[in-house]
Length: 551
Image 1 (cartoon, rainbow, N blue to C red):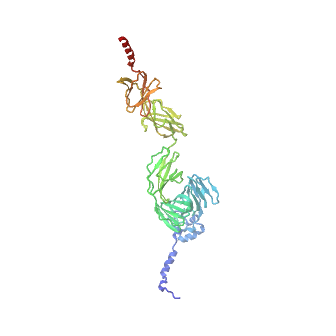
Image 2: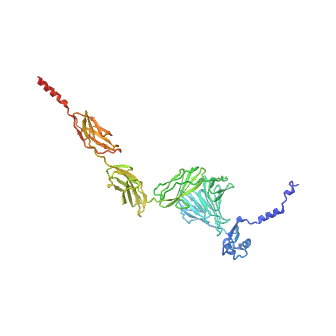
Image 3: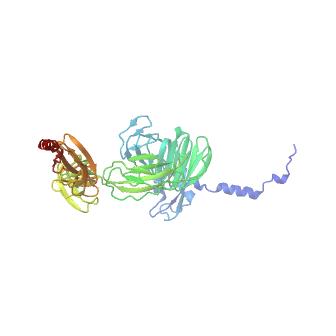
């Protein structure tokens, strides 16, 4: 059959063949480790230390054209094929653990009593429970934190001899993790995290990975460096400050810029009160916020975490020491943004007692206030402070040796508003934060009202000395001095009251002051009001006498 193509199209020139052969002869540098010779190196010791067999000594000498194997030139470079380098299994280790963390060995045996230094080997799995986390360190110093409700499997843990190159491959089955990967020291360095929907490969970076919705989706959020993310045979390079979402069986979504770090409002240190609230500015496009608390600056192990829709968070009751709080926004796809980290010093112990009596803003008249408070579990004694201002600049009383939970203020008699607070003192003399400031008002008892009664026309007018403008007066008029049969009971703002005279009836009058707060002062002296003389009783005898006289 005749060839339909012109002969010139199938002719291969000799120079093309030469170029192809030259390219094939070039070394594949991606599969080689390049070692820089240092003073004292010799090829035999190098082969014994790093190669899978010392018998490769001669192959290495020929590959690198080493003239003097016993004394190599410092600064010169050796090319070493990766397949010649010794590979050995190296365990990862637990750096720190918090809460419910379980290690499931490759033979299915379970270990829950984990501590710093516990080793993790090939095929092992780690599971975390509620409010739990574990920090894991690999042979090259790479660090990983596995958060609550997560599970990870260690599929490959090896090192290439003493070259510093470590190969770690993990499978995140469920949950969240954050990792800081050390920069690669050679082509044999590898760090990969597999999920049900994606593979991430890195060489020196910091990023977060999450598996959600029963493994149907994975999230990758890059904090430093860059991460190669693969899904459904598609790869995307995600740079720092961006994230991607990978659905099972689909390619990674285009990189999305992570939400900015929250602008946290300033926190005054130390924190001396329980239930202290952190506040930050809302982030546009954030539907939730993640708050994490740790006792270590790197936040490798968390002692608490919470997701909240609000730009605020109430700190839990923690022991006195320094903590680090990390906060970030979460967008509508669940990608978590950049974080702000705040150092916080707690100094809330020993806790102050709760003030019980007198009730808040009580008003007392003349009587001394009996101050009462609860017993604090951490207190050996208490310090009581009383002042006439809420800032306690004008202190009236300060006692630091009270070993009971009450105090009678018998020495305080001057009318004023008084503020008081109680502070716990521990057995080691540590002074805790001051308790809640409460107050009471001490007022003078109103004077008794003495009244006078005068006749005016056909009325009687009772009057008394006028008090302050906010005071009122209660006036009672009765038919007997015990005031059981009351004829009149009236409250007035005027310092007088008038009423009709009553013939043939002795009456009694008393007055007292009513303060603006409703307090009723003492009754004044009782005034007896005699009836006016009844001249009508002399008319009949007079007429009778006049009639007799006329007869």
